[in-house]
Structure formats: C-alpha cells, structure tokens
Amino acid sequence: MEIKVHIDNLNVHFGQTHAVKHVAMAFPTNSVTAIIGPSGCGKSTVLRAINRMHDLTPGARVAGSITLDGADIYGRGVDPVAVRRQIGMVFQKPNPFPAMSIYDNVVAGYKLNGRFNRGEADEIVESSLKRVALWDEVKDRLRANSMELSGGQQQRLCIARTIAVKPEVILMDEPASALDPISTLKIEELIEELKEKYTIIIVTHNMQQAARVSDYTAFFYLGDLIECGDTRKIFTTPEKKQTEDYITGRFG
Amino acid sequence: MIPLTWRKVKNGGMTLLMALFTLTVLIPLVLIFIHIVRMGVSSLSLDFFTQIPKPTGEAGGGMANGMVGSALLIALASILGIPVGIFGAVYLAEYGGSRIATTIRFAADVLSGIPSIITGMVAYALLVVPLKGFSALAGAFALSLIMAPIVLRTTEEQLKLVPVSLREASLALGVPLWRTTLKVTLRSAMKGVMTGILLAVARIAGETAPLLFTALGNQFWGKKLTEPIAAMPLQIFSFAISPYEDWHRLAWAGALVLVAVMFTLSLTARYFGRSKQSGL
Image (cartoon, rainbow over all chains, first blue to last red; front, top):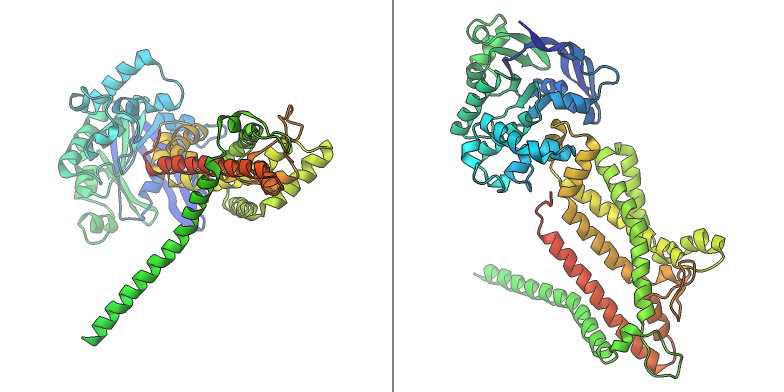
C-alpha cells in the first residue's frame, strides 16, 4: 500500500493551548480517510496543518513532520504556496467568490495567479464541472453569477475549483455539514468517485457519513489520536473504549 | 387609568422634544445652503470659472486659478496620501502583528484629531523653510497628512469586513498571500475603499488652515509646483475679509461652488457606500 501523506509526531500549539498532541498517522494513496471526534478534538487543526493553513494564523505553532510523497512539506525552503497547489482544500461553508461567474470560479486558481490561458480554460471548466457532476446543471449558464446556485451546487462548484488546479490530495473540512440531505448524498457519491484520482482526507461530525464514504477512519479526542485504522474495524470492533463510547453515541 | 395617560403624555412630549432637536440640527444646514445659494448664484458667471481675479476696483474677474489650484492640490495630496493610507491599511489588516497594529491605529487616530493648522505648521517646518518658499508642494503635503489617516482607517475597516472564508478559498488554491490580498481582499472591499477616499477628498477640499502658510495663495496662475498656488478656500478667506464689495461677491460665489462640489462628493460616496456588493 502506497502512502501519500505521512504525519509523524505532529504537535500544534495556539498560544498556550496544545491543540494537537504527538499525532502520527498515514494516508494511503487513492483512499478516503475520515477524521472524526467531538468538537474541539483537534481534527480540523490536523487537517489545516496538512496544507499549511496555520502559517497565517498568528500564534499558531506547528512542530513535527508531514510528508507528501516522502518530502517534508514543512522542510526548509519549502514554499507553502507550492504545498497548497498540491494539497487542495474544501471548506465547511461553500465559499465561491461571490462576484465571479460560475466559469470564473472554476478557473479562479489560474485567474488569481495570473496564469490564465483562454485556450485551455474552456477545457478545464468542462472537465472539472463534469467531474463534480455539475456540468449538466450549469452548462447553459456558465456566465451566471455563482451565488445563484443552491448551497449544494455551490459546494460542488468549490470542489470543481479545487480539482481544476490539479492537486494530488484534497482536504475536506466537514464539506456537507451546511447542506441538505440530498446535496449531502451527492457530495458523498462524488467523494467515492474522486478517490480514483485523488487522495482524500475528510473531517466530519457525522459518523454515518464517515462510515459510508471512508476506507480508513481516525478518531481524535482532546488533541490525541485515540485510534485509527480500517473504517469497518473502527466501527465494528474498536480497540479502545473511548472510540467505542464515541461511535455508540455515549459522549461527544 | 391615570398612570397610563400620564405615560402617554410623557411619551408624546419626548417625541416632540426629539423632533425639535432633530430640526435644530437640520435648520443650520438648510439655512447655510439657502444663504450661500442666494448670495452666490448672482455672482456666478462664465467669467467666474474662466477668469482670474481682477485688480481691486475693476469689475468682473473670477476664481479660475483657485479652482485649478485646488484641483491640483487635491490631486497631489491624493497621490501622496491615498497609497500611504491603503497600503498602511493592508498592512494593519493582513500582515500587522497586534502590538504594532494597535500603535499605528492609535497614531492614525491622533493624527486625524490634530488641528489642521498644526498640520500646516508641520509642512511649513518640513518643506517651506528648507525650500525657502511657499509652494504648491508644501500645501499638498499638508493636505496629504490629513488625508492619509482617514483613508487608512476607513480602508482597514472595509478590509476587516471581507470574510475570512474568501481569503482562505484563495489561499487554498495556491494563490500567494500578496495576490490574495490584492485580487480578493482589496477588490472585494473596493467600493467601501472608494467611499473612504471620496470622503477624505471632500474633507481636504474645504481645508483652509493647513494651506495658510504652505500654499499661501496666489492672485495669478501658479507656474510651478515650487511656487505659491491659489486655492479656493484661501481665496474665499482673503476675499471675504477684504473691504471690497466685488471681492465679497466672488467669495460668495466661491463658497457656493465649494459647497456644491463637497455635496456632490458626499452623495457619490453615499452611492458607493450603499451598494455594498463586493466588486470582485
């Protein structure tokens, strides 16, 4: 089994708070790994460490190593911008650029970076939107404002925008928690398809969702990685008492 | 029933009182408008916009040099003040460590509270004395000192209103922070920033004190930026305190034009301010 992202002895501090403690885990290539745990357990913090989003948070300190294909993304001289081009991110609340059209949102990564190429753009827009199953719904109104779309469509647009810049890993921070059940289902189906091409790490509050979409599951509690492994095993025969208590709904 | 009626009487009385106070605030504004229009309109003519002041005793003449001078001073002050304000605000909102930011913010607030005559004195000491002469440059510098903190504070407020989620969306696409700031944050805040700039321009357009010992004023067309230059507020000031009836009339016309310009600027600013949709 090939490992895409490897985390070793990861510690994240915000000022005096020790948010993530000595975490070590691995994410296999072309798999979906779910990170679950109660609020404040550090799951989003781990996720945001993987594409160096903490670099811009005042007072945040990240220690330990995270490697992408064996190369340390926190290594000396590594540009966080280059890391984020390889490791994309989808956020909890759909956040398309509000005054951009649907079309422009898909190629926003190119436009904002000043690397927009009209010849390639049409192709990128079509293939990205097809990949997130949004093409048929919007192909006649690509120039319409992105805010005209429903919440679920906006979130799929955000995923299209993320895969348009051709990342290798996609981080998803509770991507369906602001959506209705049908939109949620579509996002989940999409995750299933996307893993053929990408390595996906998804943070979720919803344990059924974790069980449905993921191959591996990691359970966090108060900044500690309690247990991680095969999703079926975590949900049926967890090794730790805390994991069992959480997935059976006894706390959290 | 008595307490209820009494409460209603008090309520009515207070409402009336507040309406009266509101009127008290509005009346001076309306009076100023009516008075300036009445006194100024009769002196407005094509000459007023095309001629420079005639020597005393001669009829006619205008404030063309003052208008051009003011426009030039405002343009120069904007070139100096707006970039400082905007980039300062970007630094405060996007990059500034909290302690430095607090200090700069406080300094900007103090700076905008300083009486404008002091600003003029600073420009006098820094530019007029070393350059050995009053000049348009010194006047523009003094005005830019007033403008920069206003632009800085309004821009910073607008930048803070841009949701973090938009910045993160851009950063997560592998867009560097400086491009994100320029193309997402600043562009989203553009309308608010424009409002701030217009209000700052309206503010300095009427400033007289900082020009008294910097731009000085000029009865003729200024030829160089290193020479004294005419400005509308200065001309209104010197004409109004002169003993000549003709000049008084010019001063009224000047006041009318100045008020009209500021009124337009404020209206435009409101227009920009109201349509809050981002300009991305």
